[in-house]
Length: 492
Ligand SMILES: Cc1cc2nc3c(=O)[nH]c(=O)nc-3n(C[C@H](O)[C@H](O)[C@H](O)COP(=O)(O)OP(=O)(O)OC[C@H]3O[C@@H](n4cnc5c(N)ncnc54)[C@H](O)[C@@H]3O)c2cc1C
Image (spheres, rainbow, N blue to C red):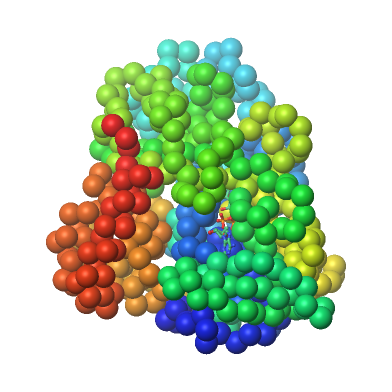
């Protein structure tokens, strides 16, 4: 639970640590710092998880792809972290069967995949993989059609609700005393008598407030270059997903397919009562000042997979509930590699009066946070190693309404949804309707009208809960519709 959003002008001016960015990386840094007794303030220019951390593939995973690229360290680290969250956050991170069909003459074939998955399991300390023959594959995916299929490897990884994972981490940080404030932008970091001086701007009022911190950690992901104080390092790569009603494309496990065009892996998987298909990997040329938007080509590319492996399935653009596009903060190799060939590790580097951290994965946020805190001088090498090995992260038991954040829960009933909304409004610094419908809950992702009808039906109740006048309600409704139509609605 978070306290009510503070007034920017009332925040203390002196801090041990200022964290800029309220995605999973910033949240992780704030949590670990708060556990170490560091006085930490975190600011987020929009809403918590507004950036990439609500637009991922929702996987807490080792990443078979990284293994195939020979990136053993990232795979091992990610698998280790996956096992930690499966134990520590069982309602939020769920083990899911993943299927990798193999057909005659395919590369990688059954032999290589068998060895890769043996290693994958070994690195995670589990024994989950098994071979399924075609009958067993068709039992799980009855309409999967491939006359050359030999069967499929079944292994396990995990799914989560990415924006709720960020909220859970922030709630833990807040319970330890971290101060968190959304809709506050950090600008202009300067060194002042050995401490960092940062101007903060309230996105609602444009009021400014100057704070001083012993250390500043710039955890702004794809936006990191704009505050790094160094040469640019980020190659923003956009990835998009389609959200499809589950009755049109039922999914009970995660199907991993190689795209017929370029052999990139594409996943089809169940998520909170819908089926998700993703993702793509393109250089993001648009301004980072506006939300990322899936292109027409990306939508076609993803639908092509469905048409190839489910030829009888008639899903087309008009069936899509919504699209979701995010920008990966990938550390550029500086070489003209294809987007998918860029490595996905994080990087920590110094700029004047700040430590920058970007890249990596949702799954490895704890490791990223430890590295950033070490570079900032809050922990030494032995403490870093001890905390890394310790694994344990969550001390406080925070009880959410049933089903909220469960990646595999079916779509909520109206009563459940209203209970979720009420809880989030009361405890999670909801400032706008998109916070409530696209990040605290996901009605806006799952419903073809973005949840508009529900908003109208419950308008008086929502107005009361949110404490908004009629005029404010109308403004917020208009704002939400504009955001949803431009960035989430499929352009037919
Ligand atoms: C399509 C896609 C699929 C992915 N799938 C997976 C997956 O399945 N599993 C996995 O482990 N990883 C996945 N990733 C990677 C993962 O999502 C990212 O690595 C992670 O979310 C990055 O988190 P972050 O906190 O660094 O960045 P963000 O979540 O983008 O957070 C940075 C925040 O900084 C804020 N900010 C920017 N400038 C300022 C400023 N001046 N002042 C204040 N705040 C500011 C932004 O608004 C933003 O909210 C995926 C990424 C993409 C794009």
